Length: 220
Image 1 (tube, rainbow, N blue to C red):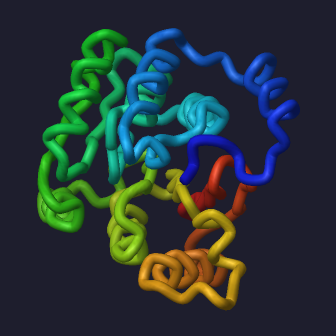
Image 2 (image 1 turned 90 degrees about the horizontal axis):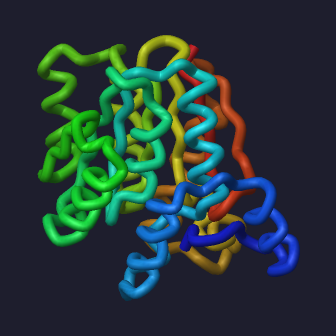
């Protein structure tokens, strides 16, 4: 649902990709391979990847966290933006999809930066908290099953340091969040998190109309 920016005309998006996104060849190849999958819409848009890489650089991030890795586009992009001694913890359930990710991490030369934890993400996040890693991450990206978004975000904020940045994908959910006729569990969870972050004095927040909507929440 976030393979391209919602509502952006095709000619303008083509222009955006031609001058506004420096997409490494390895990521273009990964995007092409993923496009053949039935679930290809789960991959982030290249313009969003470019923004996230820039945010990693701007924040000086060294420790990053990702919930929802899929075939590895976002994790590869993040890892490439990290310094040589940077690290990224990836949380996912699928061996099949993350095997694709692993192959591209190797090709991109960033596999040594990435720790993949294959388990339900809530278990992994709770384990990180139990290990005493609260307040140790600089940047976190959430793009997993939507029903658990509020629970994921709560734990990810706890794991971020003061000044750390949480990026939440799919906050528009194809426009359904603004459609009163849509009221399924995923939409309810996203609406809940959107409102919770808007009201949360612990964060500075901006919802960015890129791809399928990306909320940026900086922990104060």
